[in-house]
Length: 130
Image: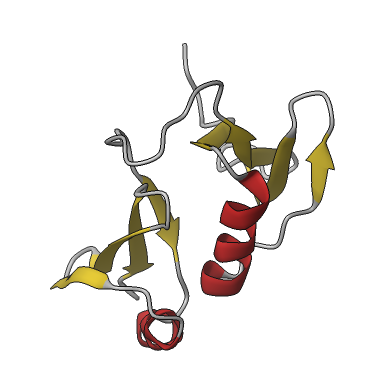
């Protein structure tokens, strides 16, 4: 059965514009472009908890939509972990990004919600230190 997440994919009508926003606002630097899929991608590596010798990768990609999705509602949300919520919120505000809501849960950490320029929901999470 499922034992992890292999990737997260965002669809847009303008891959280069959306990739630039994620680079400038969230610091996700694309590692390349895939000509076969016409996508722009980055990867996040981590170790398997049960066997730290196993390296796993989550692919993150911005892909072209096969139809016009401008102003169409989005479903789903990506949760991005952050090291310093105050720092990233300050950076996002300096870029003119509207932060919809922030909330702190002592046992889980601090969360913030916003949308990218295409309307995709984003959740930022700074895990609690405990």
